[in-house]
Amino acid sequence: MTAIRLDAVSKVFEGEHLAVDELSLEIGDGEFMVLLGPSGCGKTTLLRMIAGLERVTAGEVWFGRTNGTRLPPRDRQVAMVFQTGALYPNRTVQENIMFPLQIAGQDDAQAGSTAVGLAQVLSIDSVLDRMPRTLSGGQRQRVAIGRALVRRPRVFLLDEPLSNLDATMRTELRQEIGAMTRDLNVTTLYVTHDQVEALTLADRIAVMRDGRIEDVGTPTQVYNDPATAFVAGFLGTPRINLMSATVRVTAHHRVSLDLGTQSIHLDPTDRRSLILRHHDGAQVIVGARSSAFSLITDQDTANRLTGTIRAFEFHGQQSIAFVHCGIEVVDPDKVGRTTPSHASHDGTHGAGGTPSILTRLRTKLARRPPTALPEFHGPATHRRADLVVELPVETELTPGTRIHLALDTTRIHIFDQTGHRVDRLTR
Ligand SMILES: Nc1ncnc2c1ncn2[C@@H]1O[C@H](COP(=O)(O)OP(=O)(O)OP(=O)(O)O)[C@@H](O)[C@H]1O
Image (cartoon, rainbow, N blue to C red; front, top):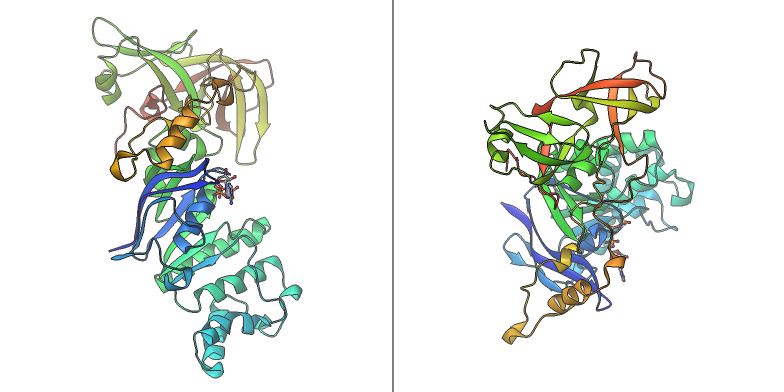
């Protein structure tokens, strides 16, 4: 069953800032959904609209079969934890956790014993009598989580709850949050811009950009089969290489991807050949993760790219080479942003055919001078033009060395000029 359904939800701040743009999303009962996206894409705003802390400008928020769009926060059975869990400074840990139960009318003994039980699960039972100011950041977050969960909410919302913790504490608490929410079977929406948190915690990830969702799926789906170049670029370290290419089709329907000074050829049996063979001359973007390349010595290998090492870094488990191949490399953050995403379509009309605030806002945004918008191809800085390649740690290369790389074409993704996949497998 669906626990939360967002139906074309939008938020406009101060009459002109479109923070969330007709966003639709369903979260299943007991599901752990992670909302992942860069700073400012609207994650917190969306969470606050679900909690009822922010009014929606348009669209609807459903909790199961109840339309909760206009419900006051206290009637939504939603609990929220923020970046820094705000605690009552003059109450002990136990008093903080049991407080929501007391407010709900439970007697002190019962509320106290529930709080102690939850504190044990959260590994803070040894600090029950301490005041918040004497706790570490991680302990404070645990108390905030305990206080949020003590009333068994229908929906648990977490807004970057680990961002102020050190790396060790982050990993520890991350695992505990995952285990606890699954044990309690509480529907959870977790906001982060950290891809590791998203990939490790989520049942499904929704990747947000500019107030919209670009992709939703399991961690494996969004990582291995991303919907857009932006999603491909947001997940994975090092970031995926996006190469500007032109499709070339020979008389025998052999497809190659012309990268400017070099080219790669697709196997005739590769399904991408079948997709691209009718698109001779089309401009595409080829996505290849750094691990899809390997260093070769044989100059005759098909799909060989030649380049010069610009920088070479030791990363412990592997080495990373920055290779100048003379190929135009595309910035994932800029693809598909030639116009503001929210200006690209209209259609939202108020009653009686009057353009709604969203339609008027989109028109206004579309009229802005193009100088305000990012360019499709950024200036070809040296760094942007490098391919980033993962090599075995024992490899030793110095800047200036000329190398040959084989590209495993079965692992590439093909995007159109707007950054949408043309060779998607799943979903
Ligand atoms: N109260 C407000 N008034 C005006 N603009 C706002 C308000 N709150 C948020 N915004 C704007 O809405 C956009 C989305 O903000 P939001 O905080 O939801 O993003 P976010 O993805 O959560 O970012 P971060 O990861 O940095 O917290 C931003 O451009 C932000 O400046």
